[in-house]
Amino acid sequence: MRHYDFDWIRTIVILNLIPLHVVWLMLFIPGYYQVDTTSMTALLLKLYISLVSSWHMPLLFLISGYCRHNHREKSPKFQPSQTTPAKPVA
Image 1 (cartoon, one colour):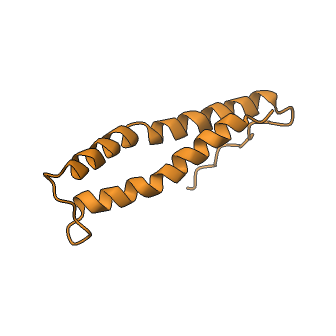
Image 2 (cartoon, rainbow, N blue to C red):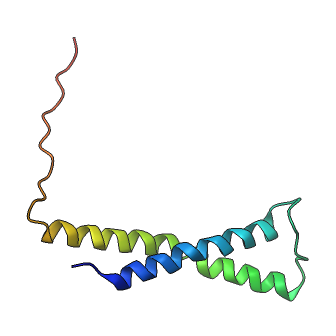
């Protein structure tokens, strides 16, 4: 059974990466549009980066691992690959 709530969370997290990277460019890349580092805007943008960057990648890995685990348990046709070890070349 597909978990549509996880699909929506994943979609929101991935779409949130676009503004995250734009803000990253605005704050930390010289030559790009720079925000004054002492302004309230810069402080809010740094807060946004610190909050979002700390959870977006772990959340994506957690969701994909959970979905993969459920797929393996419920899929009757899933068989781990049976590979034979490679013979050493002399």
